[in-house]
Length: 176
Image 1 (cartoon, rainbow, N blue to C red):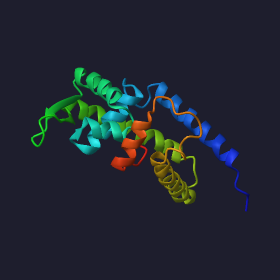
Image 2: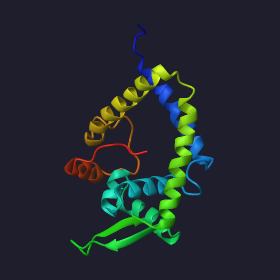
Image 3: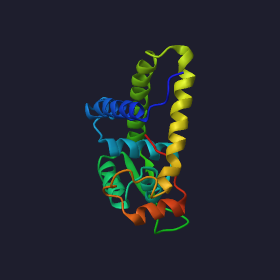
Image 4: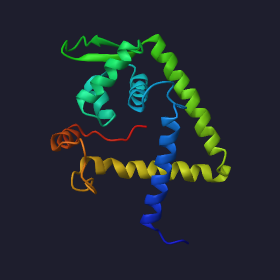
């Protein structure tokens, strides 16, 4: 069995991230939305109704960046804000009919794309690939909550308060 090589894993991840980034930069997956807006649409659609603070946590963004993305989506008629019945200070986000249509297009396009990618992997290896990715993402989750462990390089745009908030809210998961 081949010895594990961290450098090779890092290189593989860099190449994968660049190739996935190229897909999104080409506009192939988000139908005219930025990556941030695309991720917001996906998260809002999955939650059905979500407070903006929770959306920001899910996307690992500060509140002002999440708000700017939502403002743009709202102006485009894809998202609507409604006051919470429990707390009028909280706005709940949901997709409009047009937002749902855009989400469906995104999902169909991304499923088609990843289906083509997966078609290049032998059928017998697909469960191994899925399990490996799930394990890797699970291993990343505690790193988000541990400031020292997650600081391989200086985190730009991430304040210590943001990290403390993630700890106190037990936010976990990378959402793609």
